[in-house]
Length: 79
Image (cartoon, rainbow, N blue to C red; front, side):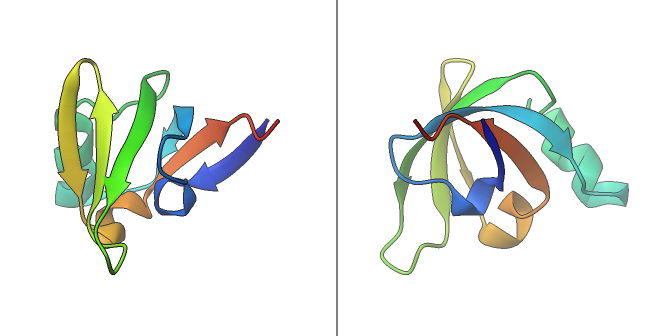
């Protein structure tokens, strides 16, 4: 298992959120969207310039900008 920033994950890769590093309003907003430790996510796609990133969590699709995704640490299985 490896820890990556959400931005560094590849399309169709899954992982489990281990921490949200955002503070203040940004951190609260990220957690309010359901991006909390222990939740499984899957990267569905990335825009041509890799921003934003589209992910699947708890049965719905969410799109984040890279500056938001950089605050989320995810544990992924690379093997």
